[in-house]
Length: 437
Image 1 (spheres, rainbow, N blue to C red):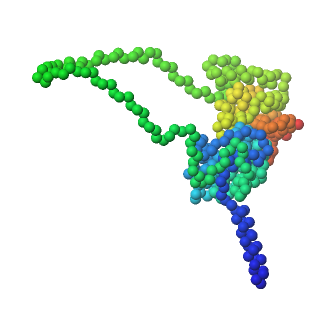
Image 2: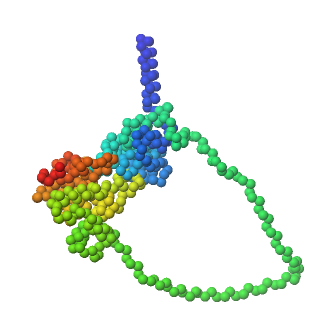
Image 3: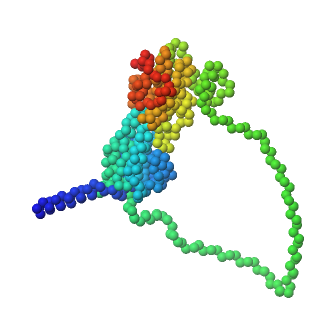
């Protein structure tokens, strides 16, 4: 009995020791060094932008994107690639009393929000986000949006081991709490001998005058009256400044009227640029095309002409969205657009071609992300067209079938491929004759 009791106690001691090593929740690593170590675990050459605790952008970033309050943190760092890249890693040290589970929940919601931004537009990056995760250890939470989240989590966990991996070469070793600050180099002594002051020059010698021979002081003269200054003439206001012009906004009817009439009077610079770009599209004016052939040619021209605006997918100040990316001016002249820029341009091209068309305002990613596409009517039947998702951002050459996956499809097909909308607001797309093959 004693022998079994001894064995049981020995096993319990080993178990407690192992558990103690497994559940270590403190580290001497800085959060910035942890982020860099996690990034080195990924097989990617993408460059990232680092923001860390104390940076001007740090508080607005973690509040606006992660949904966390600065007072909930004691330290933190985040690195993101920006543009059409989902890569982003963050390590946050929570303040005492802050709930790590709540922080992980906020970071998980951010991952889902980012996935909604990439859904349909950048399939490869969307797949990365679908695999990504947020984890915690002690008072630390980590955001792991990267190609290999398993390797990233292992690197994060290793920073808490008794024998953590070495710091990257460009990082200084982490400081322990209570370490005295490094002495400043090449600084002057705190106290220096005061500089010797030059003696004041001696006053010039004055002749000695007996007191009884000092001349009496002259009486003060009456002050002269101060006259009010003559009023200055009012400055000439000159000609009145011309009023500021009202901001330009896209109006399709204005473009249609100018196209059909040939008149250009009263048009703004942006309107003229749209018309000039339209005149250079061969499929728009070719008289030998049927409605289907013209629709297909204009669809193919669009996806070869422009791309999805990468600035609209960026998670930080890297790559700001292009102005007017939601209308034909941005699409035709800047060659970039978001889904509404694609849909409104396709609408304009169909209206100019005399093909009945409707723009649908719906959602994607299970109803969490705004999205827009079109319906066209050919031979009395409606078809759905999503030019944006037919022009995905990818690292490979998009095949013809992928570039026409959402060309002239049915409502049923869209519902199976992450499109949501109110069917009572638009006609049903059930045409099957003029599909692409």
